[in-house]
Image (cartoon, rainbow, N blue to C red; front, side):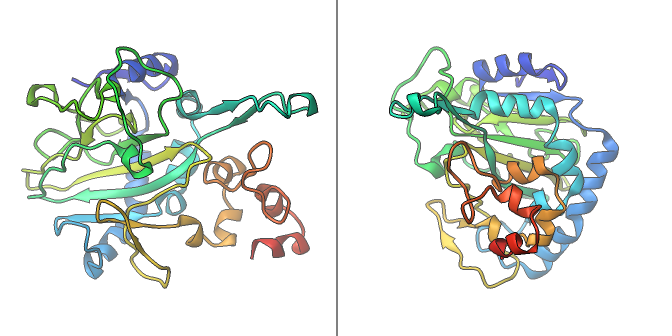
Amino acid sequence: MARRVPMNDPDRAIRVIAEDGGVILTGFSSVEDVHRVNEDAAPFLEAFRAERTSSTAAPETARCTRLFGRSDTARETWLQRESIQRILTHFLRTVTKPYHWVNDGYGELATNPILSAAATLDIGPGAKAQDLHRDDFIWQQTHSETRTTYTLGSDVGMGLLVAGVKTSAANGATLFVPGSHLWAHSRLPKAEEVVAAELDVGEAFMFLSSAAHAGGANTTEQSRTVHGFFYCRSYIRPEVRYIFLSGGIEMVNTADGGFQENQHLWWTKEEVQRWSVAAQKQAGYMMDHPFIGYCNEADPVKLFRANDVGMQAMK
């Protein structure tokens, strides 16, 4: 089964993730905050069902995309928790020592992970299970050999799934293969190696993008609501494989038949300005040391707080 670790013990969670590829975090959220995020997502789930514009979503499935911008509680409370940031930076922080800058003051470069996608998934009765997969395939990651121990720095992404309702094997709790993050592509899971990461309301499942997992089948009469947040290394292009509800932005097919969304084209300047600085940086509105992500030769975070002249650069 998937192991459980208290949210306030990130060091232990890091050890379990390194060993298993994922961990259930107990005490992740209050029940009240879960209900708030459920309410934030609800109108967009209803709009999705009404418009039903996604050719990639099963008829039993509804989605609320861009959840990072649509839920203040998710963005500013859940995702800014020190324990979550510690786990993310442990696995996805990139540190290098460029050889020709050492004598020029750039002895070490370090960049933190950024948001890759955020969405609520509401999986209705009768929905079938997904195929087991690794999320890092969207970045064309391959695993050529099976390892016995985890190598820090080998992953490019992580996922965080927060239960909007109690999840179970019956209603399609996330299927997970402990230890699969160490496997070569040629190693396929046996049926007895697959477990259901069942969550109570207030718990979350956090996993590496190299770990095999899938959404389970919902054989009950009730929907299963899960809020998903996905991260990648800061130098990798974030990718959201969810269709748009409306708007004139071009959609591009990805390898799995889904769609790719540039979330930065959706958020307005005014929306992002009201976020905390930490949230802006997490979404990628920052300049990593020394140069990645600059805007008009400045840090975007500073431009958000500049005078009107400086703000013209963000339009």
